[in-house]
Every structure is written in structure tokens, then in C-alpha cells.
Image (cartoon, rainbow, N blue to C red; front, side, top):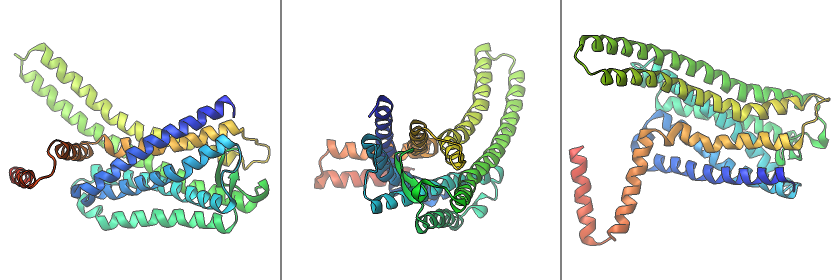
Length: 339
């Protein structure tokens, strides 16, 4: 194992640890918060975290073993199962991100009719479609014997038997990536750019009102005016930054791998194993970044995690007893009444 392979193995191991912990925290928030469970985005987030968790505990360790041993890590049956899960989970995760972008588009562009346009039933239908879509392609690949170990990617993945491509496998690969990656990317770009347009329009209206107020307050201190103008600038940059993270991370993490898989269909293209493993590492890094981009950095999730941490700390400081339990129950009741 050379230096590059050592770096790849350590990188995937580090990504796996971060992905495991962060996605478990997202699922913990979903379990402990009834408010998150009642909201439509919570359904999409849970499905995305579920896919990322399975990729973390199944596909990432298999790739690490393949990089270290430089050979197929398991038997054929296990390798087929791992390849099946990779195809299914990758497509499902992409479509879940597209569903989250559609939800945010409806919430921002149609705020007054959001509750009627995006219901829990609608969210379950969209999640069911993503499962059916991913299952269709993964079952087709399994029945066609296109799930094998690839030395280029050091993992069990879509790979035609005997190393040859064939017209059927070429058509399948193009259609699979077109309906998974390209479709999700088009939805992400359309919805988030619409969201950004609306956000900039609202920021412009707020800026006009703020400037009119500043002109009326002639006696206001110059430092206050400067802070108001600085806040206007930060508000404009905040929306652009968020949209750039959503779309940019999707392209950076998935595009190199998808382009490589399409390019290797050409008979004159020979993909380097180092580049193949690197592109696979980028796809794995998306599983670790998704919880922060879509969940853990939001105030609602931080509040749930903070409440869970406070309860655990209170249990450690005050061991369970009849007196303390009744007092905690009474305090919780009082807090609920106050809120």
C-alpha cells in the first residue's frame, strides 16, 4: 500500500466517524422532537440520514478494506449485496436532497399556501418515489449481473462482468446517472435559484425601509448607521452563501465520480485507480457534510440537542430518586405551563 492509498484509507475512516456521529445526532433529534416529526422537511431529512448511515456502516468500511488489501474484500455474494446497497442508497440520497430543495422552494415562493401544497402525505409520496426509483435501478443491476468489485474504485459497485461494457450496460449507466444525478442537480439549481431570487427581493425591500428610517433619524450616531449598513450586507451574503453550499457541495462531491463513470464507458478512456478512489472519497464526504448543511446547524436541531444534553447532565448531577424525580416532573410541568 503506497502513500496515496494510506491517505485514502485514513480519509475514508475519518469521514466515516464524522458521518456516523452526525447522522446519528440527526436521527436522535427526529426521535426526541415531536415538532420535527410533524414537519415535512423532517421526513426528507430522516430519509437522507438513513441512507447516509447505511453508506457509512456498510460501503465505507468495505472500501477501506479494498484500499488496504488491494483486492476484493469479501466473497461474491457479500460484494453483490454491498454493490446493491451502494446503487440504491446513492440514488435515494440524491433524490432526497432534491426533495428538500422542492420543500424549501414551496415554503419561500408560496408561503401562504405551503401547508396545503406540502403535507406529510405529499412528503411520504415523494420519499416512496425515491425508494421505488432507486430500487428499480439497483434490482436491474443485480438481475443483470452488473454488481462486482472494481479495482479502479477499490469497492463493490456497478461493474459489468468480465470487465467489458456492452450496449445494455452503457445505456443503463447513462440512464441511471441522468435520472439520479442530473435530475437532482437540475431540481436543485431551479429551486434554490428561485429561492435566492425571492430572498434577494425581500432583502431589497428591507434595505429600502431601513435606509428610509436611517434618513429620518438624523440624530442617530454614525456608528449605528454603519452597523445597520453592515447588517444589510451580511443579510445579502447569507442567502447567497447558503445556496452556494447546497448546490456547490452536491456538484463537488458527486460530479467527479459521475463524470468518471460515464467517461470510462468510452473504450479509449483508462481511469487511474488513484483518481477512481479519490472520486469515491468525494462521494463519501457528502454523507458527512449533509447533517451539518441540512440539519445540525439549524436552530431547531441545536435546541433539541441542547435540551437532550441538559437532561443527561441533570441525570448525572442528580441521581434518580423518588424526591428528585417528582421535583423534576413538577419543574417540567411548570416550564410547559410557562411556555
